[in-house]
Image 1 (cartoon, rainbow, N blue to C red):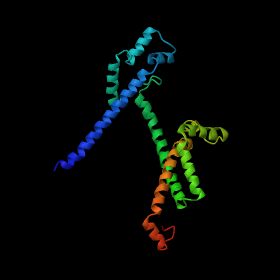
Image 2 (image 1 turned 45 degrees about the vertical axis):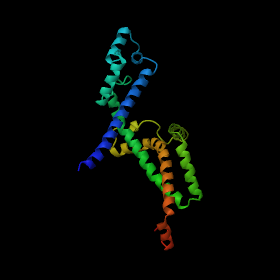
Image 3 (image 1 turned 120 degrees about the vertical axis):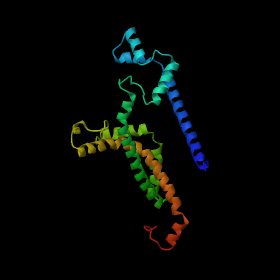
Image 4 (image 1 turned 90 degrees about the vertical axis):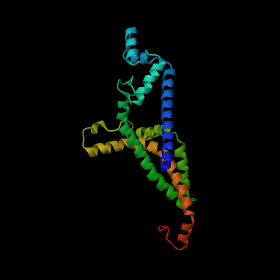
Length: 242
């Protein structure tokens, strides 16, 4: 019977078509915003080289395809983007894809560290707050969660840099590892990376922590009021057992 296969494939194809259309729309908006911004990329590149005459400017425009009509530039941009070619960086004079790949590993490490830490600590705080919902501790968790969720990430990061980089200079505020530890053992390098990871992970994790603590608290309060919990307590089961 092809009906189940059809019911599965049609929504999948529809989703893929919508995703492809969304990617094209993002690329179009990105291209339009870059070209609508004031300034000439050729002038920027020439300025970084210390200036250039008209011949050099024409060579720069030809090298980066800036001398072509906008429609042709857009078509080339879409075609290369679909192939994974994101072009050449004006600033670093390197392929953009290589620059992204260089930073992909540290970014994934930072996000996973912040997310996993927030899940564990947020769930723990939410469960503890739900045990005694009217206590001072539960109120403190609620207030801290709301404050942490309300603080912008960039502002939190600046405060942590000032606090632990200037007032109490116990944390590194730049880089991913200590240059003095480069070339050392694997354990020493791992400790250095972890030390540099604390402040960025804490900055990102505060928002996740607030979300998961509130979610865990609300879920636990709902569960603790369920019939089978009341039945267990009525039968004399200890709180640890419950």
